[in-house]
Every structure is written in C-alpha cells, then in structure tokens.
Image 1 (cartoon, helix red, strand yellow):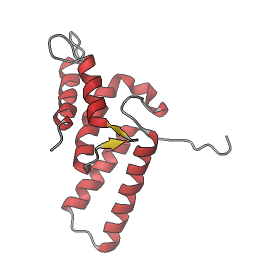
Image 2 (cartoon, rainbow, N blue to C red):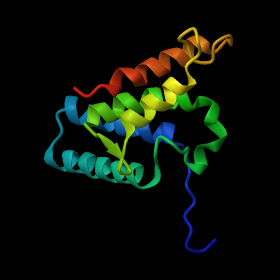
Image 3 (spheres, one colour):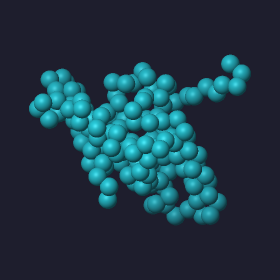
Length: 135
C-alpha cells in the first residue's frame, strides 16, 4: 500500500534494543562518534515508543502476543525507569500499568492463578510493579 509503512519485529525487540543501548552508553567507553550514534538511536527508539504505544492498548503488530503482555510489561517497566521516563504518549505508564495489573491479579495474589504459567506471570508482574513507585 503506497504511503503506509510495514512494521516488522515486535515491541519486545524494541524494548530490548533500547535497554541494550542504554546499558552500552552507561558502561562502555565510547568515542564521540559512537556516543552520537547511540544517542541518535535512543532518540529515534524513544520517539517511536512515544508515537505508537500506550499501556492501555497493545500495538497492532503485537496483537498475536497478548498472552505475553505481562512478560512484556515486566521488561518495559525497568527499561522506562532506567530511562527516567514518566509518560508514554502523554499517559502515566506507572499508574496505567499498576491499575491494569492489579485488576488482573488473582485472589491468591498471583497472576494467572491455577495455571502452569502462574509463577512466571507473577514474577514479570512484580518486575513491573517494582518500578511503579517513583524514585
């Protein structure tokens, strides 16, 4: 379709790449050219996240992994906290994520209680909730 762009990959990869770039910028001794390249990639990556994403809605390309939403948020929360971002697309991601997760929490305190995935889902939910409180 002319004028439309095809999006490839997933926001799991997007979050992992942003996280890796931030770690590289923090821990590696980069020369000026390398640092500029990393900064440019980070700006573009965060701009993409800001333009196309909210906690409330799963991007269309991600619709197939809705069952992995909690795992995604468990990766997203620590990355956003590291980047010191308080808002995504003008929304407070901490408030939205905490509200969504607490609404889905089971009576026994876990997520997806009574399933084989309860332990993993609960661990990822706690990773995100651990980032909800502002430093």
